Image (cartoon, rainbow, N blue to C red):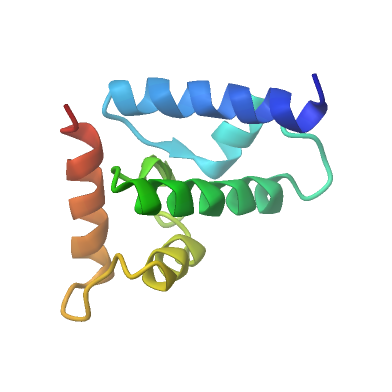
Length: 111
């Protein structure tokens, strides 16, 4: 199995575990857990998370990437919100904080 497929499988398992526990995980922790190879580990991870956002948006599913946060900000990086806006997921009258809390609620309360 190629390296990319291995780390993506590990990352998905870590996300599923994080979501099931109704917790959040930092980009760094997820990159470490998934053993994403250097260089540009976080950039590689965020590109993959943006692909997940697109998949979830098309499927009408809660955004799995919402549980991945910046250690400093305590919320996802600005690219998360930019990607969500590109997919029409954020309403004009909704703040980023409100959108984020809605995403977490949908994610953690999925049936």
